[in-house]
Image (cartoon, rainbow, N blue to C red; front, side, top):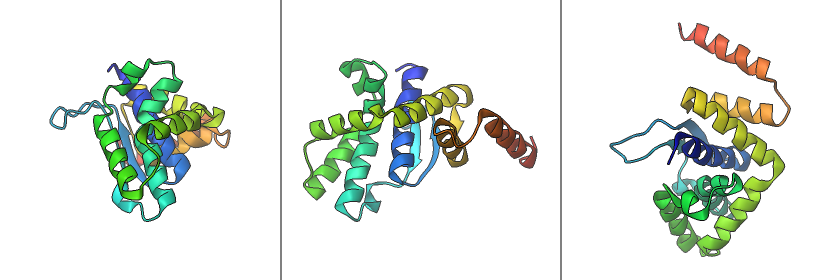
Length: 169
């Protein structure tokens, strides 16, 4: 999977987490060869799904990397690259909570990420991932606000400069 595809995949997960209220930490497209991953999103796991609705939200989040690639015009075969662990986690929740089959959730997630506001967020996060390689929660929240028209690119640049000064860089 190319960097662009990895960025779109991880941005899909980050978008779903942000929109569905699932706690997340950082998002990266830096490969981890030890774990055999090309990218990752640190987020609260399925163990935090205490209701059927939370379980459904987590299933959407697990399917979101795949769905983001489909929404961005990738073939089904391309979109499946790197989804084994995602779909295994989704299947575990589906079985535990007796939810609709995975194929139905994949389509629901494509529909969810096809919404204009979610497409804008995914596009903005993936573009920033390609530049920065790793984003933290503050970055993600800022990028969501930019995509939603609640903050500007200038606000984000000012924030990044202030953070860099604070961190001594």
